Amino acid sequence: MRDIVFTRGSGWIPKVIHEDGRLKLMLAAGADANHEPREFTVPISEAHLAVIREDLARHLLLWSAVLPLCDAAGTRGRLDEDAAVALLDPVLLAAPADVDALFRRIPWDRSRPVAHGADIALLERGQVCQAMRAATEGSNERRAQEHHANRRRAARGTVLGPLDAAILRYTGQYLHGATVPRRMPDAVDPALLPQVMRVIASAERACAGMRIGLDPRRGHRVTDKRDWDRMAATVDAAVRRAHPELVDDVVRTVSFLMCSEAADRSRSIPADDPEDHTDVGDGAKTALTFTDDKGGEQKWRRDGPRTASGEFWEFVADRSAGDNEVFTIEDEEMGEGIQLHFYADSVARITTVRSGEAGSDPQYQVEYSLVDGIGGYRNMVSAFVRGGCAALDRHGPWMSDVAEFERVRRRRDAR
Image (tube, one colour):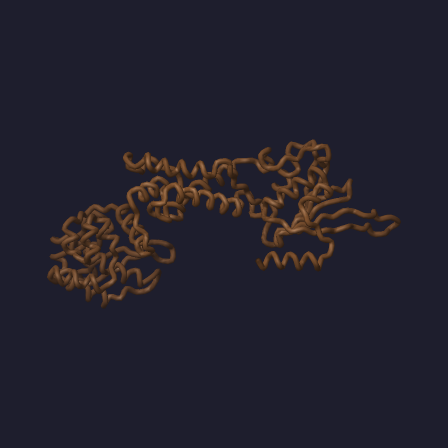
């Protein structure tokens, strides 16, 4: 039978219960294998209960001291009850100077005192009892999260100025640098917002006209890493020149904002968008066949609703995978085609030299060339669609000797 003896207004502050004829401190901490909160209990005395009832600060400090033991128990381990009991007298009954000394020796969870209003400057100086005079039963979890984020930065040697902090708040990355940045002007102190917008304007001018295309080799929504890195480097350099006082974290978050917005714009553009690669010209193909390394096949005709390039890259995005990285475009009527080797950043152009007659096999000329990323592949495909293998001459050099080509490819990869 379990009866609640004492509880505070905030549901997460540990309760005191009566269970199996004993007083116990009960707290929820950590999670089990199913991500449900774990409950732990520690036996206490009437003297401990009296302090817990009357002294919020000591109650919260005890919670902070016991939490690391709960974390150490993991998802299914047992709480080290002896260690927890050993904390009761030193935290609840000792003189303030002794409590301060104890918290300089033991691991403890700073987030709980901070969330409940403790004076952060005093906590940092080790004056925990005095810091807890400002504590309240209500909690402010965001305050604790911001304090934790600042401690992480300080461990890396990063100290934010007012403008740094304002920009991180504007992008929503003050707490978590891994979140996708967005524009949140309402999160910024109005007095600092004009300075923030000047930094953003510097970044926007730097990347005006730049695009981050999609990489259909990785599916429908993955962006081209080279485009991303190019834009990030451009923005980074421009912001550092214009605002050298900003810390690295802030420069990165501004670059991240520009790149993520450019990537979102690309995801909303169809694969055969006219700004990408158009398939027009007197020699443009009228019918093509797309195939992959897994037996997939798709026909395209010029009188269809989409361009050949757009249709082909849609085919690639649908079917490309780690074990499916060879795609071919063939013009059966002209007896020519190109084969894209995504695993090797290379391409082969194939031309029929002599058609098969009287049961003999046709003869082909096969030439190889290296490709520079998805942009290079797009140029190859667009050129072939417009003008066939002859239009690929300027995208070489082309090599017919396989051994020579492999040596060139290995030298490139080694670089």
